[in-house]
Image (cartoon, rainbow, N blue to C red; front, side, top):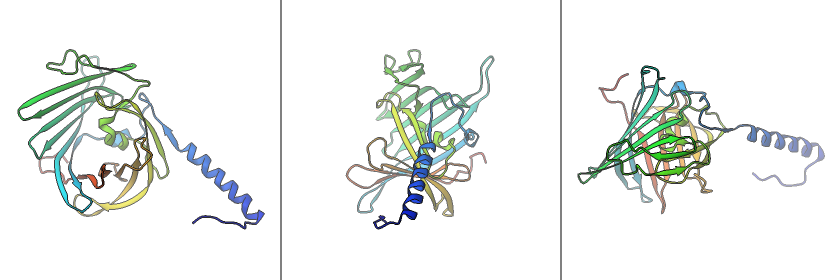
Length: 267
């Protein structure tokens, strides 16, 4: 509740000191990240498969399925003269029959992006966009067959992470209550690169895929809009994303909810 006068001097001085301490801690607990830095909890990003149901919730409560979204993490063993590489593939099987696949490679210690390929198949036609992260810019991959974006160039004001993998990236960070992460992201071939702030707003317990409650970190983001856009719930035990809720223009929500593993998945 708001503080109102009168205050005694004995109260005002400790209050001022406390507020100054809070302000100092808030600044000190903002983590500014750049590609090339080792990530504190990279070990939490383990090989495996996670599936999510994406659906919308309208203002009247009506729900509509969009797709099943599969994210597969693996580590390629080192080839001759090369270091191991982190590989993440995404697949969206949409209810209308369209199929989107994204295939990307990263440095396994720092999550620095290397390549990104997007393949969309709709109505029997496949379009391909392949991108290469290089110092100072992202360019089209000229050697990729049928790459419709081979002549693409986007200058980067600073080295940036691949925005398509924010879920895995946030999983590898030292999440803690009150901590803010200032992250340079770029979605290859899409919007302009920029820095975005993700705030660990606190803790919440929500139902997991099997209905049992899971203690989670609640992370929020406004994507530089000045208003809350997305809420992420990451399990405190392994920082896997359990749920995301994103506000939709005109009202309602886009929900991404973790599904139970399938029988063929590796334990």
